[in-house]
Image 1 (cartoon, rainbow over the protein chains, first blue to last red):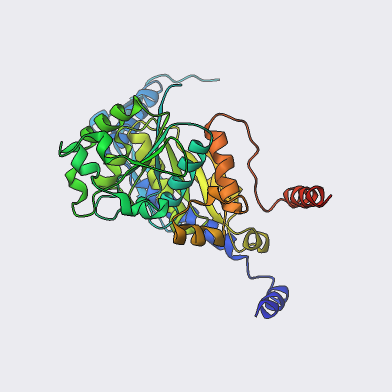
Image 2 (cartoon, helix red, strand yellow):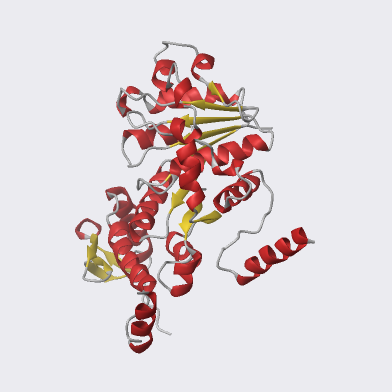
Length: 92
Length: 266
């Protein structure tokens, strides 16, 4: 059985070793696990985002939306930030 | 010496929390520390049988926190090693029989008489887990090199951090070096990459664990057990010794073994 296993692996190199499969599956499942975060986390992120963006732009704080969205094999930070005006425009 | 409360946890069941608690506790007692092991798996107690002390239980942890007996009356003294005690879990109650607050008081009480207080945590993340971590200074996470175990360990890392235990260290248990070499098992680096916590030690898969559990004698008592040797090294690392972590798939380690055998033969 072990010999058969060896031979089949020798001839079918496109089959990745199972640990690579494990690692990749684990990576993906943890991306999703870790994305289910607490509302506190999102609020903190939101506040920090507002603080940084306000240095450059005049934004509508109340209409700002931030969320983490799961996609097929990744997560995305989706932020919808309405801009009221440009605060500091530095032409360089 | 300042006493330390260490919780041994994993999230997933069956990865070796109880075996790890029994062996680290026994190894630390062999190093002349005063050690108490607490089984917090109420309703599913097992640390007593792994330690071979199941016939000597009179009172349990629930009796202690409910005031049915004195703490000293519930502690079972291990006759093999000086300074080693077990506080067994209750078998007929459930995990809500104790609160995290009571658990914290209990560990603080034990700090007076012991150098190491090892808390064996039940599987899961519910009340039993919350009880087990309540009085802990540090956490040890046990994981096997499997997708399900590593995933649960990751969740535990997060929950421990949320509870203020951000210095958890990892024991990788039941590593099979042959499978790692074949590429059919995740290696130490793969797991550390994913979990990004410090490694405390690696324990190889070893049949002697089954035998020692059958007998109720922790593997660290057996000089020839590879897992027992690994646990003894982990205990020394817990003691602050800077000891290299053996990977068990490293050829230099095999060479060392070989040299040792040659030296013995001389």
